[in-house]
Length: 171
Image (cartoon, rainbow, N blue to C red; front, top):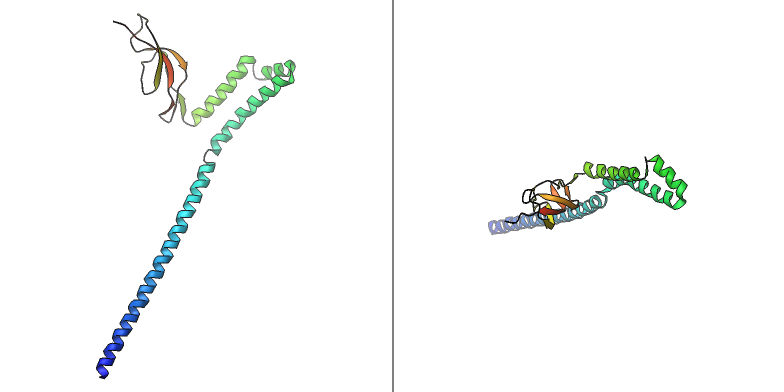
């Protein structure tokens, strides 16, 4: 009888060991689930912060351009003498606008934006949008005759197609 009681005791010890092991696995699993959930939430928060400030360096580049535009506006509101002074400071009336435009294009180019080439080029539906056609006998069929609105690409992807007038030969 003692042998039977000993076996029962060992069996109960094994069951208790298995229960303890199962409890340990359960607690480990719960801890890992909590860590995973916390990590996911932290990652989402970091991604939100990154997205919120991702364009800050680009926007900082636009600040001198904004300053130039605001300076020109203020000069025009102050009167002809101040506007003349602003224009003189920036090389003349249209030259001042040219400088502001060049300043803007430099910012865009540094950030991967480029102008789509048009006039004299072969029409490409991937980057050009034909708004008008004309018939000029001396020009090749499908050649862009005029740019109606500039188009832009960002790192090889079209931001806005160039709007153009294309030569269409009639047979």
